[in-house]
Amino acid sequence: HVPAIAMDGPLAFYASPGPLTEFPRAVFVEEVPASVSDVARMVSRLGIYDVVAKAFYDVEVPSERLGEIHLRSATEMGSRLAERSGGKLSVATRDRLVVRCRSYVVLLVAALRSRGVASRARCGFATYFTPSKFEDHWVCEYHDGSRWRLVDP
Image 1: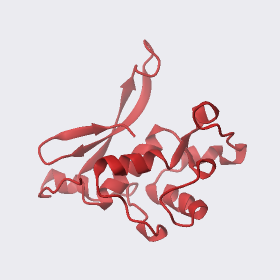
Image 2 (image 1 turned 135 degrees about the vertical axis):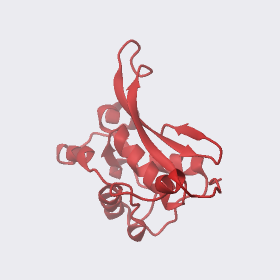
Image 3 (image 1 turned 90 degrees about the vertical axis):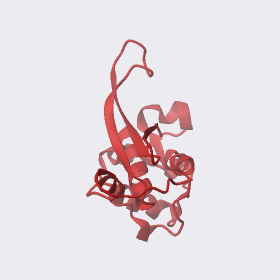
Image 4 (image 1 turned 90 degrees about the horizontal axis):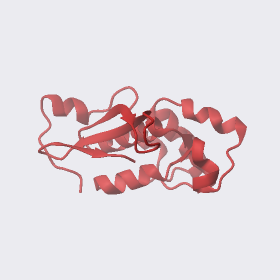
C-alpha cells in the first residue's frame, strides 16, 4: 500500500512534484495504482529499454522513435504514451515509450508523488549488469514512514 506518513520538512519536498516529475493525470483516464509495488510494476510496463528491445521485448524499434529516450519530463513522456494508449496506463508492448533507466525512474517518482509518496531519483554506478564494468544506472527511493527504500523499476 501507499505509505501514510506526515509530510512536513524534507519529506514534504520529496512528496511534491517538481518540474520533471509532475505526473500528467489529465491525459490518463485510469488512476495510478495504490501500492508502491503496483506503481513500480505499472511503470515497468510503460517502456521498452532501447538497447535490449529485440532481445527482451521482441520489438524492432523504428528509427524515428529512438529520440524518445531524450524526453525529459514525466509530462512529456506521459503525453506521448497517452496518445498511443487512448489515455490508459496500460500500453501494448509495441507502443511503449522507448526509454533508458532514467525515464523509468522519472515516471516512477512522478507517479508516486502523484499519490503523495515521498520519493526521489538516485543515480550511481552498477556492476550487476556487466560484472567488473561500472555502468551508470538510475533507481528510485521512496520513504515508507520510517526510512528510504530502494525500488529499481
